[in-house]
Length: 295
Ligand code: R5P
Image 1 (cartoon, rainbow, N blue to C red):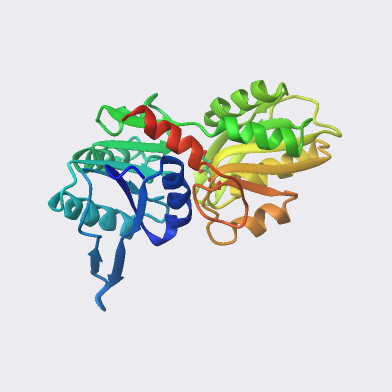
Image 2: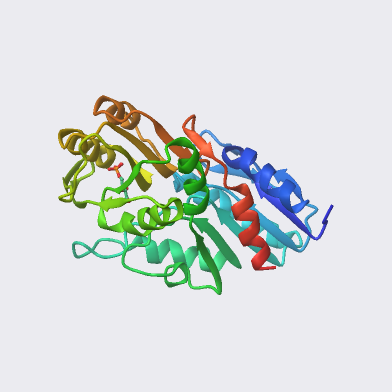
């Protein structure tokens, strides 16, 4: 057992954090948190810590979780932690990267600075970086690492549906779909998307022969599921034989899954960055490999 590093995790990420810690042969302990009647948080960490602490937590539905990781990190510093690495398999607030209307908060920068001021390193997976190339442009620290889940996704698809066309529902997804298609030696296609509202998107699929083809839509996340649902509808209209969906982050808010299925998605698959019954691909080894590179 390496007792120079330990993992602190929270209920929602405990399973994945334990697997990650097993790979590294380090202790994994739980942070306890409860709410007072007025919703303030009382949090406690195990007080005997090594100098290097990994805080492992996925940050979907993030608002309480951000407060909790801040409380936990500051408390860890008081109890011996000199270096704290945040491993957030899903990293929140990375999508709002410009001021669309005057007065809008650019949350990517604001939350990014908060993380930079709190943690020494940040590691995440398939972060939604649209107008920037590297995570350290959002989180200005040396080790701000955004790893891609494309290799394990490719392994999964190769076994599950080797002859599928990999389909990206918008321009941003090209980085993932092109890589996966190359890995599995398959074809890919990318649509153009305009978002009109939280639950409203307009998609134009490329001029390609989808008739009779098996298609897998791959995206970094599905939130309301509207993007994948509409892409599926259009692919079906174009004659697709089957449409499956594979996402890194299973946000799946509200009726997302039903909506996708109603619109023709046959299977919904995801990685385990967010715990969900659709999880088919485990990423703890990938995260552990990335963590080793910063030691
Ligand atoms: C944004 O462009 C992302 O890559 C996803 O396509 C988007 O977040 C999906 O959102 P929804 O499921 O709400 O359409």
